Structures are given as structure tokens and as C-alpha cells.
Image 1 (cartoon, rainbow over the protein chains, first blue to last red):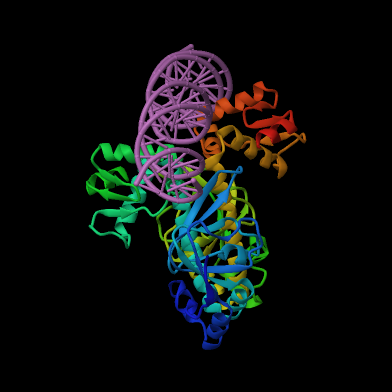
Image 2 (image 1 turned 135 degrees about the vertical axis):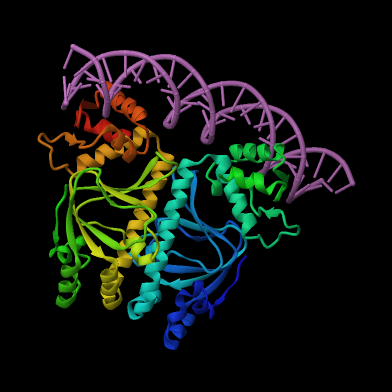
Length: 231
Length: 231
DNA sequence: CGCTCCGTTGACGTAAGTCAAGAGATGTGG
DNA sequence: CCACATCTCTTGACTTACGTCAACGGAGCG
């Protein structure tokens, strides 16, 4: 079960992207935006459907993925607090290129596409900021795709864990613990592999004394070794 | 050797993207834009360097690629007549994310970033059009990356050839000939593999009677079979 | 006529996907 | 609280596409 309510804080979020709105625009946005709490694995929008809204992640994490041949999902990106998603569909007036579901419990704000586009059309500053955002995000996404294509699973896994470690997952009691609040299946998707190979890689690291595995958490025993394996 | 001269036609090109400029802006653009002829393998701009200009391809084809570990190049996109490139760097005020070189002889117009940005800032319509363009292009690029990750070399090659066939390469005398105006090395890069595997795939198709190979050209003997292999 | 470069072919290694079976978990109903 | 069903995770054996290394043949060129 999940709850919805009016969202009056979107203007302040989105990484300050919307901070250039006039008071009137801010009010209009607040009136139209609806915040909604999603449970893990709950769907936010679907690939191929008309892009009717832009979404702003307020808390938690969501994944964006494409379905290939009925049963294979490719995660193309993740979004965290302050990130927008669905932008490309709404701005380009094309269907969503990916589906979005919550990875952990997440609060996501829905901004109707019509409203969002009217703001973009009226507010040149917003348009410029969006261009900057899209340019950078697109470049980053490209770098990630290239990395995924030309690095091995273990390397990607090490990189993933190192990143998680760096950004300090909130539920990290001791300094070297990394929370993995998801199933192996999902972790495998994020790293871009299958559960089997993921398991082998993980236990391989453990055997080498780099990690200690604990079902939904990983303790990093040898930080340097992990970073070296991340390349 | 290559020649440069003022370019007065950019405003009309870029897929009509710049058709919304005022006469004054058009003049300013024309005054600053310089058209330059590049020979195959000639470099246009380099990954990692400051993004000083947006480029508009007038004729020919160029490739955008990233260099990985000293000797491995990954082609991330190609651009043909009417396409812009270098956009992300200039708009995002970040270094170029890839290098660009001519694939065939190409005429490319250089638009100083400063000028381009001033036009974007002044002309809201241009900003909106750019958002649409970037959104669509980004979605397309993502689709291509996903395809490259989850399809086999033969499939990608078939897809590549089918595309070339569809868009009708200019130098196609008989209806079923596809010009390959580049070395195997470069073709391999475009398809995302090595020259060796490319050769095998190509000759595999030939053995199956799908293609007839001719050094810099390929004749499609069985169009249906090729399309089926493209998936 | 040799030199070099490119394309082709062969032999081989290997990362990682697939299939399948077993070992823990987790949950449910009696 | 136990027994049973259902997951998830792990492990093993096998397959395979593709990259790598190396050798060779032909085309172009001096």
C-alpha cells in the first residue's frame, strides 16, 4: 500500500534546477505536483507508454530499465534524491524509453508533463538549466555504458561497491559496511550480469579476503584491494 | 591538406534546428561559422579538451569515439549531413566526452561555443528545440548501447548493413550494393568488434549466400535473410 | 622483384551465460 | 513449534561467442 498527497516542495528540490521559477510558477507547480510513496519493486512508469509526467525523486532510489526479450531487464540508470526522470520523454514528446520501479522504499513526486512544459516554455532560465543538466547527464550515461561494455563483471562489481562505500550508505553502522538492500537478482541487474556470475564474483572477493558477506550487507575488509579491482 | 572558408549556410542546416533565428542572429552566426573540409581519419576535436565549438556536419560522415586503454577506440556514434555534434560539451560547459574524426571526406562547419551559447540564451525557441533534439538523440543513443550490449556481433553487423542498405548509400550502382568506404579496422570499430571477428562474420554471411564480398563494397544477395539475421 | 600493409584464416584461451541440482532461508498452516 | 512448501542463494558442469596471438596470402608500391 502507498500514500499520495500534494507536494509543495518540488520547487526547492531537483538539485536546485527549479529554483529559478517565479513565485507564480512555483505555486502552479506546487498545485499540480503530487507526491507518492512507492514500495520496493513497485512500478512508477512503463517503457513505451506516453510520457505524461516528469518525476522527481524525493527519497529512496529507483531504477530505470528496458525490457528486452520477455524476461531480460537491462538497468540503464538509477535515480536518487533530487534527481528528475522521465525528462527525455516529456521534452522530446516521445514515449518513455524505459520503465521505472522503486529499488528501496521511495517517495517520488509526479509533475504533469503539460505543466512542466509550460514552465519550460515560459522560463528561459529553466530551459537553459535543463540543457546543462541533460548534456551532463547524457555524457555520464555514455561513460557508464562504455564502461559496462569494456570491463569485466568483477571490475564492475568492485566499482559498484566502491561507489556505494564512498557515498556512504545511510545504514552503515561500522565505517566499512555497505548495505545492499535488495535481492541478488536485482544487484545482478544493476551490475549488468546474472545472479550466478554475481554470486561467484562476490564469493571470489570473499575468498581473497577483500569482503565479508552478510546476506544484505557487505563488509569491506580490504579497501585498497577493492579499489584496485575497481581498476 | 584541407581548405577552410566562411560558412553562410549553417542557419539553414542542422535539420532546420536553427531556422528559428532572427535575421540578425543568422547574420551573426554566419559571420562566426567557418566551414572546413576534412579528409578521412583527419581529426575534428579531441576527447577531454575544452568544448570550444559546436560542429555541424554539412557533408560526409564523421565518427565519435572514446579512447580507452591506449589503442582501443570505442565508437559511440556517427554523424552525417545536417547533424550537430559537440553540443553536450558546449551546453554542459564540460570537456568533450569523445573525439571526432572524419570517416569519409567531410565538410564540417565550426560554430564558436560563445556565439552558439549567446544564441541559445537569446532565443527561447532555439532552446526548446535543442531540448527536444537532445532528448530524442539521447534516447536513441541509449537504445543503441543496449543493443550493442545484448546482441551478437553477427546480428549487429547484419543490422548495420541493413541500415546502410535502407538509407541507400549514395555510391550504390545496382540496388543491392552497399558501399563500405573504409578499412576493415574501422568497420570493425563501427560494429563494435575486432577486425578478425568481423572478417569471420562477413565471410560467414557470404558462405550462406547472403552477401557477396567485394573489397570496399558488399552486394546483398538475400535481403530477407539479412534482415532476419538483423533480428 | 621484394617490401609493407591489410585482410583472412587457424588455433587457442577465457569470461561469462545457461542448465541443473543442492543448500539455506523464509513463510504458512496445522 | 514443527512440517512442508516456496523462495533465494550458491555451486557445479557445460557451452559458447569472441578476443588474442600468430602465420600466411594477396594487393599495392617503390
